[in-house]
Image (cartoon, rainbow, N blue to C red; front, side):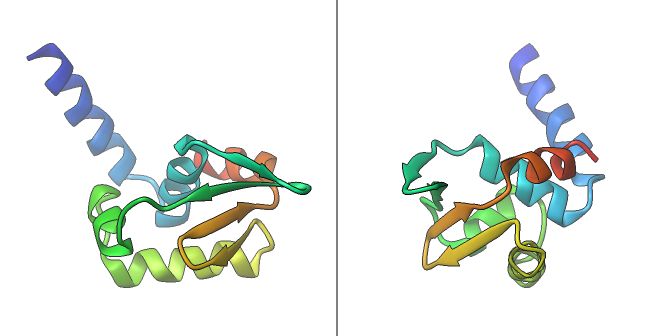
Length: 95
């Protein structure tokens, strides 16, 4: 019961963050592989499921990913996401 309560509190706190901050935190929490000079993570679930997990809509999730890509923090190639600036992502996730 205590674990469930802690998880619920974390979800509620996360939902107060901007969508891009939630996405950054999620990407940083995924297992990463080194691909040449970049860290790469793979979205293991469809984007609509990840959006639901993060408490947002699929459209807002896609816009958030695009915003991160436009800002040069990530690069998308299908389900593979290159983390181009992990330090900036960490700062964003801490908002």
